[in-house]
Image (cartoon, rainbow, N blue to C red; front, side):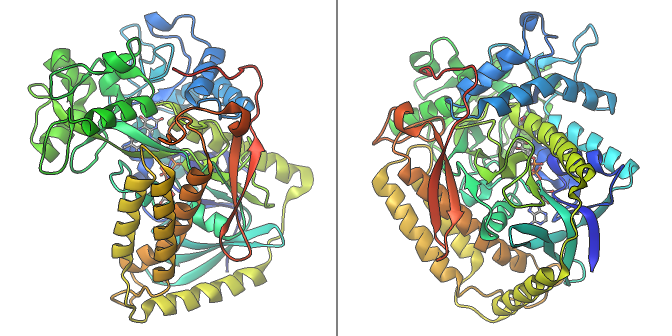
Length: 567
Ligand SMILES: Cc1cc2nc3c(=O)[nH]c(=O)nc-3n(C[C@H](O)[C@H](O)[C@H](O)COP(=O)(O)OP(=O)(O)OC[C@H]3O[C@@H](n4cnc5c(N)ncnc54)[C@H](O)[C@@H]3O)c2cc1C
């Protein structure tokens, strides 16, 4: 049996940062279902927030101001101690990445360039043109390779092994050999990313299934705030590829079919740079009220960059221009971009504390699969890249301290071998001809969640969505794959992950249905106001004995920022 002191699942920014922080002292293995550089982190465009005060307009920016913006942006659901910690760490972590060789864009004076982003009081988003995730991920991957981190690429984790409140490791499917392999570890860390692909119209990579989240939940670890799902205002019509907030940060405007810059009616001060939840709802309202444009693929609104000029567009938004040329044949220098809101980010996730620790011994998580919570009900642009690197680093420190303090655990082989046999039986079941196909189930789940638990929510539709999820769970039991082969069988992997996606969908819809208020990205037509008296609390979903989620609530940590109305 393969064994490591510490096993990291995920080759995105979170997993790599944790690995880099641990590999000098421990034997670390890193498992990822795609090559690390294909993780969704690579797609991040706009930037990473830190109060460096480099921009002439942000000279008096501080971590306290960054914290306030984050708490306010979260609609007061974020835990304020966690936010303060993240914002204090922001500047040091950006400088650390710079010193490790990350090529940030620069101001003429040589300092790291910063641009304005939505919901931020100052221009504090550090960037590298519109490929910030690309440069950060390459920097961390190079460092991990240089330090000799053992990577197992294209190994899919199928199950997490927890027994007697202790984590013993995971079972993986090696896609190359088709073998099922148990891996034993004293500490397991998940940096498995978000659950965007549970929804239709997502900006996320197809690999963002949220299977890590569903897996932790199935193993008995609770999830937090799953109903909070971010919809990004500007995604390309048809493919939903992200048109970064950097477009609006650089000055792009939004126009309806009357040629009106409609944000003036909704958010006269912040205009296009109001927070994402608000701009998404404004765009969807314009479309719903007949002021969108028609397209064979749906209704859209225009994102206009033309006034920025060719030079600036080509310099600062190169990737955006190329995507528009390649996918819709439009040059944003000459024509507005057709956009619609799409699913973008998972605020909820595995319930962990500010050190990334869960309630199960030896199991940690960080980044988008986890909920600390620093984003609360709505994440600000540029705060997620920050979250991944900060909490990847802090978890590595916490794990190091725990082991130094005598907490090194001897994981047990027996539960892992038992789990391996269970997965083997599951694979055999899936290989038998079944009357249902995972791809069809996924399509139905995607469409239902986007339409009925999406940007606007109402009890009746969420009840229908819940009934649909239960129906899909039942039908999943009859799923079979076309080929029984285990080697590079993506249909088999999709079938394995579908079980977990349905758990994610279930906890998301149930949490949303029960939360009778509107807060951040969770907007209820039937409860349009925020209700601090009853709902300043996190939703905790735990898998009950019959397999259904059992919901409880936990108070939000408030330090210095008392809730105010968010306009
Ligand atoms: C298009 C786009 C643009 C964005 N732009 C920005 C931005 O400008 N600024 C910002 O702050 N945020 C941005 N975000 C959000 C941010 O990029 C992500 O939240 C962040 O990169 C997530 O990093 P992660 O390390 O948590 O997970 P990921 O980068 O998603 O990595 C997940 C890893 O887990 C592995 N994995 C998952 N499941 C399994 C399994 N079952 N078995 C084995 N391995 C598994 C995958 O192989 C992968 O390596 C953007 C997101 C998108 C989609």
